[in-house]
Image (cartoon, rainbow, N blue to C red; front, top):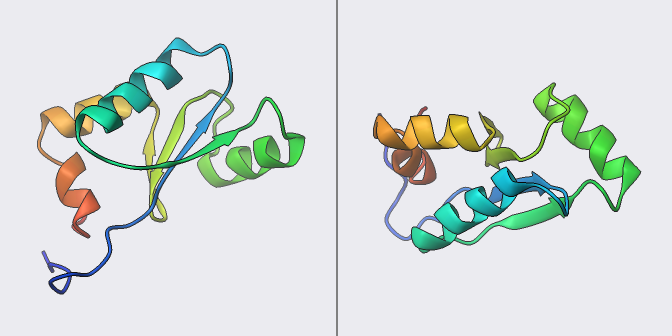
Length: 96
């Protein structure tokens, strides 16, 4: 596994969400607990954003979480990846 150069920026986290979504809240709480920042894209407010998320993730449910161009999946997928030790290395530029 290649490590990024020291001081290299972490891949950007993008979380597609909607207003009434408990899993979206849980995903954001987890990211916050890890001291991470993310870009939130509200698909309930923007039809074009919803279409983009569906094309990118090939899923219609929220949240959909991306680290850079890597599709992590939804909240359960992110937590499963975290439990097996794969989420934080992904943020450091490692493979999933």
